[in-house]
Length: 211
Image (cartoon, rainbow, N blue to C red; front, side, top):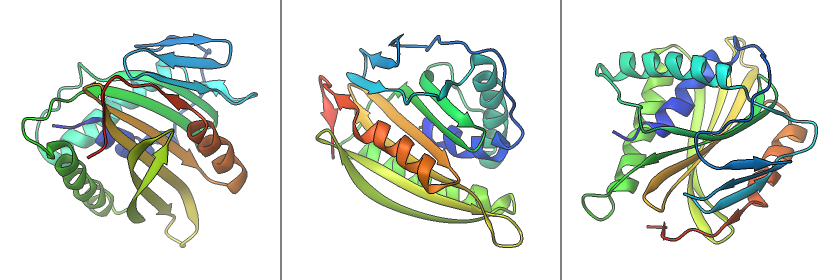
């Protein structure tokens, strides 16, 4: 199944407990030069904001395992994540961060990718509900450098109704990969920094799919 989005959503359940370790800049695909990341597979380049730290591989791997376990518990089946690639992650703190992933996805029929996204939105909503997490979700579309992305907006609340975290998930099928970006934030200033970095990034894909 399409696991990239599910992982990103379920990871927010564990973000509040993640700590910091030594900085490591070693994406599964692509290259970081200075403050610029370039993915050749996706055809994507982005400038990393100054004074934001790269997310460490130790943190990513730990969250991966927790997210995988949570997703398998929710779906009642094993999830194969061997093909999932972590392209880029950077953060200010555990509540304000950016991550991008990719995973091969081949449509067996026209519109399968969009169908998978709709099904995933339902999984996400049910995951929040089953874990007793109060959340609002909505969907939309955003164009970034000429490519239309599916967007899922989520707001997570504490038991007293205060907002704990906001999350924006972007996805599109590009060059045969399910490309996803996850932005978490808890204040307007950091939201602007994170979204501006993404909206100013550049795409030169071989075969973008915008259906």
